[in-house]
Length: 130
Image 1 (cartoon, rainbow, N blue to C red):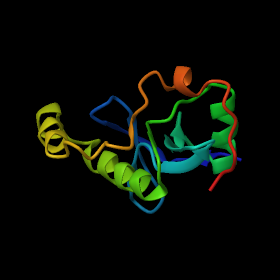
Image 2 (cartoon, rainbow, N blue to C red):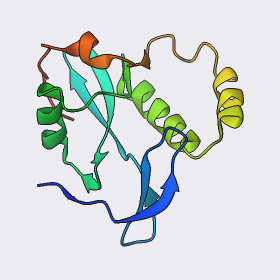
Image 3 (cartoon, rainbow, N blue to C red):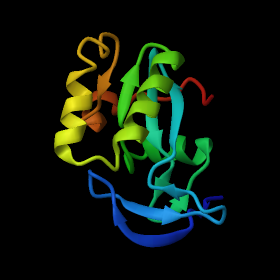
Image 4 (cartoon, helix red, strand yellow):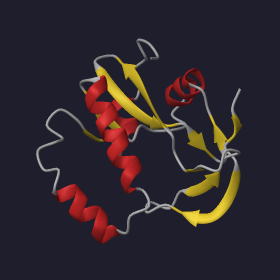
């Protein structure tokens, strides 16, 4: 069952997500989780509307088209690198983010962002949750 992410702050990320302060003092807005779906490895935020969801709850939400992945990849290593990069840039302003992104040219060879991801993955069921 989803648990509370923490206390909502007045802070928003670069992409407009609310930031929550956890009971241990950490500021969070997404907490990426990596899942496998067919031959794709995807990252998906585990924080939605102030709650942190488990992998199985996220799988269910994906299958119901309630949420979308933030990126897809061909390996767990690549997905982890992307999740770390995204996490490190969510509080950046657009100019700083643009500079960091331009420094990564070529790093999306096997992956990419899932804008409109529901179209790309709709109807595809998960092979497993890792």
